[in-house]
Length: 206
Image (cartoon, rainbow, N blue to C red; front, top):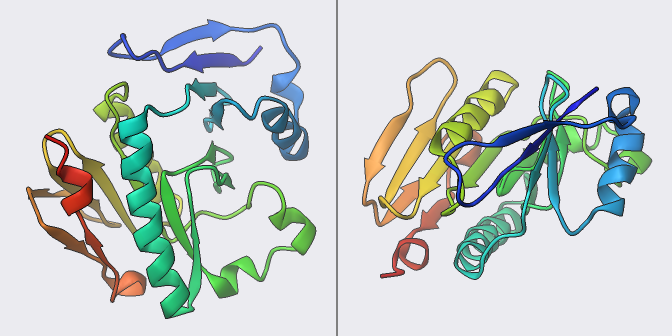
């Protein structure tokens, strides 16, 4: 049987339940359909088959997420080299985990290798760039693990944003995370060269 992981806002770590369902035999298409039937929840699946369920964001986190997605989307539209996506987008990583980063960007030429009908479901690729935003109910350790997973599965750059400590943790392949303290902006590099995220409306919540 699969494990159900429920993110609870009052607990430091996730609660895990064993559930007697057929989720352990679902292929990617069936899992996608099951997620659509429960579209009020944000659902991910780990490489071990754990089903992770998170409640919808609170207003503050939703507003911060919108600022991030808006800035990334505006830049991607101008750059033209890839596609920006928001937190509702699912990716099937090479390790078979299904993840939905808070914001992501992927090269257009990579997306075009995927058949159009598959693009309507979870994309079987790892994004090239990911952003994760810490919320009050999130575990920092869980987000750090997710960032490491994205990098290990092919992402070339990742930003973990902590709006409470006003930090940005930068993840790159083959390197320890770099932590920026109270930056006004954070700038992309490599494929993301030219993208600058203004953190004023993300950090300024006091």
